[in-house]
Amino acid sequence: MNYKILYVMKKEKIVRQKKWVDGLYGFLQGMIFLFPIIIAFFLILKNPNILSVLFIWILCSSLLFEYLEKLLYQHFEKKWGMTKDQIESYVSRRANLGKSLIHCFPFIREVCKLNEDVREEQVRFLSDWFSEDELETHVFQKTESDSKLKEAIETMRRSDITERKQLVEMLFKLSVVEDGIHNDEWNLLMDIMPQLRFNKYYVEYFKNRYSSLRTEFDEYEYKNERSSTYHGDLKPYYELLGLEENCSIEEMRRAYHSLAMQHHPDLPKNAGRIEECEAMMTKINEAYEMLRG
Image (cartoon, rainbow, N blue to C red; front, side, top):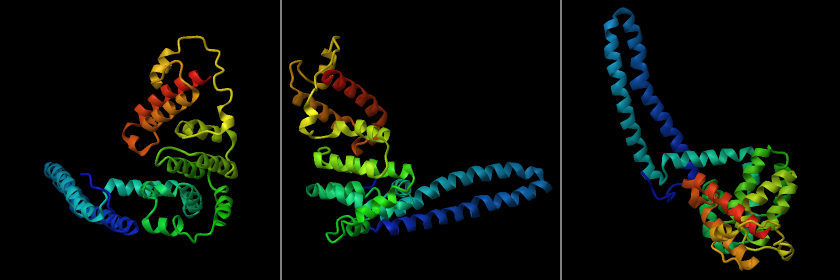
């Protein structure tokens, strides 16, 4: 069952209640299923004929548990405004950011400040990781000190590389929430990565992964665009990008960006078709690289 995510309760309370419901379900499972099986095991030693009764009990208990779980979680999901899977995904995403969770906020704040017109989209995206109170207090609070960014950089650069990658990946996705990554957002992210001690290979990975989602480029990046020495048939590449063969570099960039905004696997709208989008972006990237040289 799918519920519209209304978050009628505070997320912290929802997570606590989810743990309580999980514990209740585990207790009922033990009382109805495991405890009788343990008793039956000892009875089998005295009377082997009871084995068939045990199998019937196991089958009936399995069906009962399936129904009980569905009934129990449906009741609470209506109250929570979130499904059981959505809560587990929320907890998992927070866990992936590691123990340095609180130090993520100054980075997020810097990105959000660059595009305040899309606050609603930013909140919707960030709610997959953080509660409403956390966002209001640490991200969108006007009095939050900018000096905390330096402290966060010092802390995060000592954290595990996996946690740093998770943070930067989230920042890139946050930058895309409306129409793509603008120059000031791109330059901020390019500045953050070396400060977090990312080597050139990680930097190149993120540049290659997200450059197609950029809305604009600096002037120097337009130079020497069409220097390809490839002399094969380029028509299929033009067709893939929906371009005429005499198109300008700017038209090529716009087409590339437009297709990336439709098919990039890291966009939330494409969560259900990641493999398809990965394959499509491979083709789009190849076509763009061949045409621009």
